[in-house]
Length: 121
Image 1 (cartoon, rainbow, N blue to C red):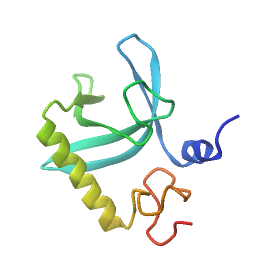
Image 2 (tube, rainbow, N blue to C red; image 1 turned 120 degrees about the vertical axis):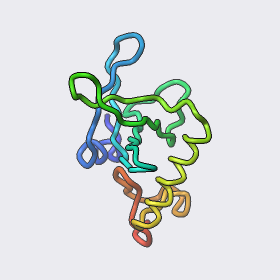
Image 3 (cartoon, one colour; image 1 turned 180 degrees about the vertical axis):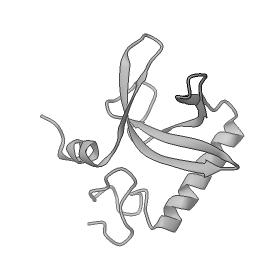
């Protein structure tokens, strides 16, 4: 039986399907897309558990465009850049009034981007 939170996320979030190295489709929730230093970055969270990725972790890619004009997800290999982009996301999320649920002990209906501050149960 599906978890109610999972059902809410599926209804509220865009789901992006990527193909892994084995050719298998893997679904991700589109958590956010931000502009940082004139480049775009996308934050994804796996719909189903993936080995090596904690339930509360996100995957961050730089967005680019391939030869056909389609979106291209570019892995970020520079650890410093990865931290800068994540910190920018946290800053923007705080400015928007979203929490990361550490303050409310995950006792809220967060949807994709966290819960509005003050609305946590």
